Amino acid sequence: MDWVYDNKYLVQNGSTYKYYASEQWQVISGSPTEQDYLNYGMDDISIVPESAWSQLTGEVELCYYTDDPTKTEASFNIETDPFTLAEEWEDKEIKIIEYTDDPNQTESTITIETEPFTIYDELGESVDVLYYTDDPSKTSAELNITANYSPLDELEGDFDVVTWTNDEEVIAGNRDMMLTYDALPFEQLIVQPTDIALYGDVKKVVATKVTENSPEGILRMAASFDSGLTWKTYRFNKWLDLDIKDTTLFKRKGMNLDTLNAIPEKDLIALTRIAYYFDSSKHYENSYSLDEVKMIVDAPRNAVEFRDMSLQLLNTTATIDLTFSGNKLTGVLDDADQGKVKYRVLLNGKTYYPADGNFTRLAASPFNIELNIDERNVNFGVENILKVEFQDYWGAVDSRETKFIGSYSGLMFMDESGDFLSDTFGGILKQLDYGVIIAGQTTLTKKVRIKNLLGYAVDHVYLEMDKKFETDGVEVQLSRQADPFLPIDYLTYGLIQTEDSIDFYIRIATDIHAKPNPNGNFEMKVTADRV
Image 1 (cartoon, one colour):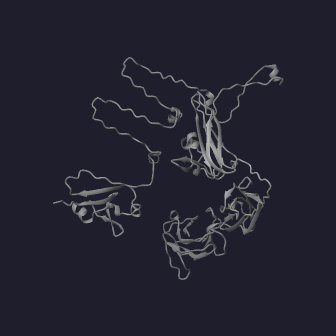
Image 2 (cartoon, helix red, strand yellow):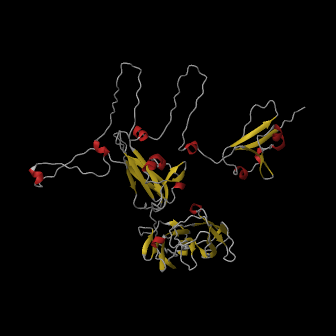
Image 3 (cartoon, helix red, strand yellow):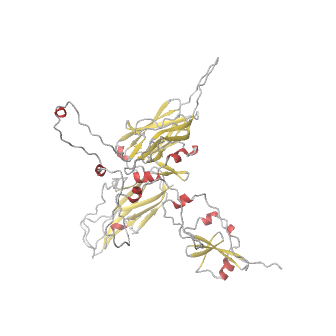
C-alpha cells in the first residue's frame, strides 16, 4: 500500500502568515498550528500569480509542512528579474563569515578586487596612530612618514609669492624675476563645452590612455544626452543620474576607461557630451594622461558616383503641430520624407532653447517636443511671442509662432476680484486679509477661486489647511458654499479641465479664550492627479 502524505505551504510576510485563496491573500491570526497547515495550507504554491507576489513588501519566507517521516529537506525554484550582487551590495557594508573544523587553521585570507585608492582617500586629512608595547624599557615612540609634501599644499585657492631684491637690472625693468615651482595639479573637472558633431549613429566609444611606467592617477567620466543639462554614469548595464559638481561622488561613481569602452551600441543613442574628472594625488608621484576619445559612427564612407543619368532630389519641408498651455510648449515635429529634423525656440525675439542659439541635434522624425517655459523670462499681463524654427536633414527651414498673455502656471489661488494670491513657486503675492478678529467672534466669509493653469486636466483635487499654522482657539473653516456655510476640514473635487476653475469659501472662527496674535496667518495646500 502506498502512503499519501500531506504537503502544505504558507507564506510568512513580516510577522503575519498568509495563504492565497479566492484571488487574494488570506491572513492566519497568530502563529500557525499543525491544524492550520492542514486546513489552510496551499497544496501547490505555483498557483499564486505574479501580481499577488508583488503585493508583499519586506521580508518573505516560504513555510513548508509535511507529515512524510522520510522527508529531510525541501527546495523551491524562484524566478526574479535579473540582478547582480554588485547591484544588491552597492554602498552597503559586507561581512564575510567563515567556518572551519580544521584545528590547525589559525587565520584566513580573503582577496578582494576594488577600484584603486590611496590611504589618503580612506583616512582623510588627519589620522591618529596608536602604539602599544609591553617593553618596560620603552619610554617613547617615533613615527617616520615619507611623502611628497610642501607647506604650499596647505594653501587653498590662488596666492601670490612676494619677494625683495636689490638687483639693479630687475629694478630697472631690464630683466624679469623667475619663480620655479614643481607641483602636481589639483583635481580637475573638465566639461565638454559643445555637443559632439556626429553625422550618423554612434556604434562605439573608444578611449585610450598614454601608457606610463609610473603609478596612475584617477580618471572618471560621465555622459550627457541633453547637451550638458544632466549627466549620467553607466553602472550595472544601465545609465544612472550623476551630479558631476559633487567631485567626491564623481570620483566614486563615474565611469572608468574600461567601462566607457564596453558600453553597447543600444545605450549610446543620442549621446551628446562627455565630462572628465582627473585627480593626480599630491601624496604620490602619479598622473593620468588621456590620449584620445573617438566615436565610431555608422556613416557613409564612399562617395556616390553617377554617369550618364539625371538625378533629382525631391524634398518635402518638415511640418510641426504645436500646443501651448500652462506655460508648457508641446508638439510633434514631423517630416514626410521620414528624415531627421531639428529645431530651436525663441521667446520674444530672444534665444530660449537651446541656450547657445543653435539648433538641436538632428533626431529621427516624428519627434515629440515638450518644453516648459520659465516664467522668469515671460512678460506678465502682456502679449508674448513664442517662435519655433525647425529644419529637416536637407536644410529646409520653416517656423511657427504662437502668442500668449504672460501668466502663472499650476493650480493657482485667486481672490474674488481675480487677483492671484500666490505665484507658481509658492511665493505670496496677495494675502486674504481678515483684519482684526475679536476673540469669540466668527469672521465674514470670503470666496476663493482655484484655477487650473497646468495645461492639462487634473482629477482628485484635495484642499486643506497647512497644519503647521494651527493656533489654539482659532479654527480656519472651509465650505463648498457660502449660504448655508457648512464647515469642513478639507475639500475634494473631481475632474477639472484646463482653464476651468472652482470656487470655495473660507472663514475664521475663534473662541473666547483664544490668545492674541498680532501677525496671525494661515496657508492652504492643494494636490491633484494628472489625467
